[in-house]
Length: 115
Image (cartoon, rainbow, N blue to C red; front, top):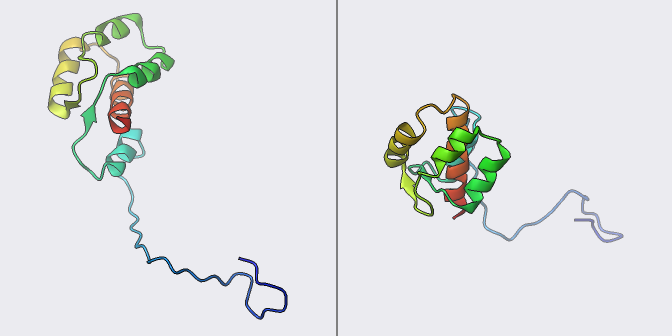
């Protein structure tokens, strides 16, 4: 806020009539997207959703054809909890690589967060 000409107020002085908000900062256990989503969801249990948004994210990852084919076995447009989703991954995507499973989890978690 710039003071009017002739004012004795400092140019960095500002008044605020809004209530004060408290801020709380802490470090995350990791720097992954899943950790950030956990924070945004206020540490509520993670959910997963295979929808158009998730499929668009997964298409950008250029997953192997076999992984993409097996993703079709997951339920579409249905919110899944962690236990259910983990079980489905073990059944339908047991050979997904060590980087592919986190990418799949991130895409479906982000879709559930946006839904």
